[in-house]
Amino acid sequence: MAKIAIVFALLLLLPHAALALAVSPPSYDYGYAPGEKNTFAFNIRNDGSASYINATARGPFSNVIKISNDYFFLRGGESKSVTIELVVPETKSPGKHVTEVVFSQVAPKRYGRPQELTATVAVVGLLRTFVPYRQKYAEASLSIGNVRRGEKAYFSVSLANYGLESISKATGTIKVFDEKNSISASAPLTELLNVGSLGTGAMYAELDTSGLSLGKYFATADVYYDSIKASDTEEFKITDLQLEIIGISAPDITEGQLAKITTTVQSKWSEEVGAFAQIYVKDTGGAVIAEATTPTMKIPAFGTGKLVAYINTNNVPAGAYGLDIIVNYAGKEERMEAKFNVLEKAAAFKSGNNLAYIALIVIIALLIILLLKKQKNAK
Image (cartoon, rainbow, N blue to C red; front, side):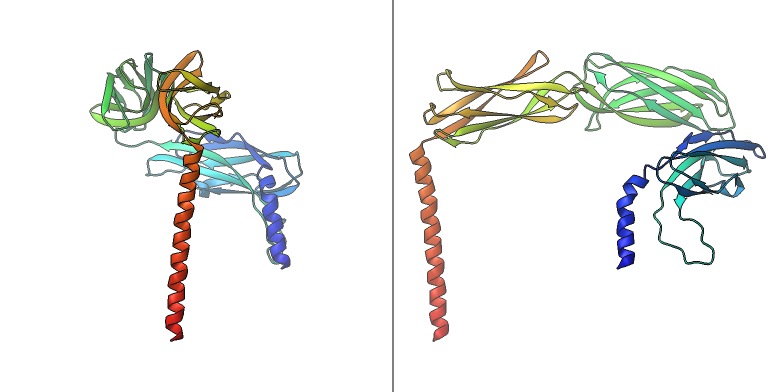
């Protein structure tokens, strides 16, 4: 029971302990040169309570890493610099190699005693290098942000040469697909010449968006470097300062009740926008007999919001009515029409009585069935 209590107490402390350690810088990048010695320094800061820190390495080059101080004590508010030495080993495995240096909060070492239950919090420093490919090899990385409709979309492609051979020439195309995976537009990328081993070059394209609808798109960069293909895809949106009415809820009500009218809107804009709705109740001749205005609501970027209004129907006779709904935002407006019914009180009462009668009949029928079964069993 005592052990369970200790575990529970540690779990309660975990969210606070998670903020206790910090490492800076978070990562280092170094060149791949077998036999070369690299020295890195990570600063470890303890912003929590006093604790012991254990440092270990894990990853592809962890066996050749030396840590200057792999076990030390830090009081709250103290920091310590830990030096890491790495002699780059030779490897035949090309690509990215990331080694992690893990700094963990641990219990004090207690020799000759059983290990105590501890809660561990850790931070990680990264050591990254890239082993070049012996053959010609490059990767493309596409960048594109959201674009306002009618403005030009600017695409940027970074081509990184991860091979030992130089790239003589690279060309390419940007293709834009809609959510149904149909090609909506395309544009050529600028030409790139002479990218050396482990070098990087940039390619660009621009596209007029005036012919594209609002919504989500996917851009794919197809790059051909010395007849070899590299591709990358990114999502982006064609936006505009526009709200779309996507739904109206106007349930039937009885005379004299409050009518709840809910207008749901969808934002096509990349920023928050304030909006409110005006509701007009019109008779069959088009005359306005009641109205209401919703409070202003903040509609999140690319999100939805519900604008709710309540209309007093005390002076509205029973019948069918039209609703004229106007959503106002940023000097613009969107309109939609709907219908709803106001029922007579007598009709609503009659409808309620009918339901009561049906329920009563069902109950009586069930009682008769039960009674007959009981008499049958008694025989």
